Amino acid sequence: MPGRFPLRRREKISRCSVPTLIMPGEFDPDTPPAWGQQLVGPLSHAYFIELRGRSHVAGFYRCGQQVEAEFVRHPENAPALDCVLSARGVEFAAQPKLQ
Image (cartoon, rainbow, N blue to C red; front, side):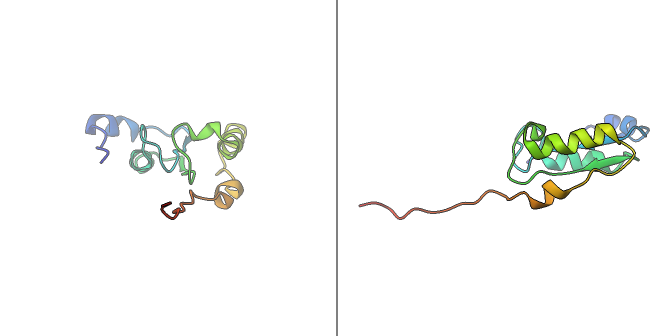
């Protein structure tokens, strides 16, 4: 289970008003979505967008690139979520055991 950021770091972050995009992948083992959610609270101008079915470096995927590009062009606006909302999660299927 991911831990929490040290308190001293959260205090410094709470003074930040710079527009910030936090965009983890749903299955990111290195920077899990829970860590990003902890950052959003103290930031006054942050957007948290979790990409379903993706792992680390969610911005490498087409949808992530679209969200990042829009955020860089217009950081004062919430990024459009069209591709995020239409993204499918991971689908699992079981195969019958071969005999």
